[in-house]
Length: 127
Image (tube, rainbow, N blue to C red):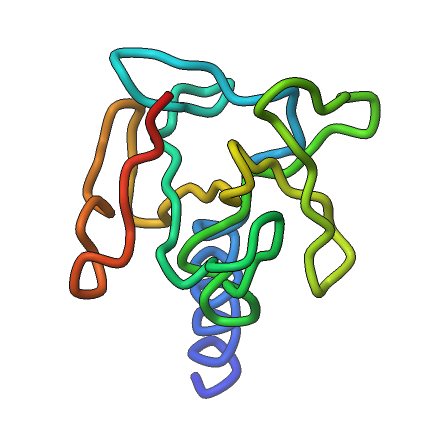
């Protein structure tokens, strides 16, 4: 019975970990309904604590809850779009120097549950 319980717990932990995984790398986000979204239509956000242009301070546990909008290998930055190299070495999209993130608690396209989170430090990214 203990072995079965341990196995069930391991499966639950693995499932939880994948629920917060970032979307696959993609071309630059697109504008839809007055905000930026991923290729799957998930809302993107900016973080007030990203005070230095093209630098993300959302790493470690923060990036689990706020997965970065990852850049596809063949994607090119242009105009207001730039590419941030994160502390973990991954590449992340930024708009006008502000790194972009999804929110793990948004479950479907169009959700905006992260807007105003953490005493107003997170905002829906807008063109």
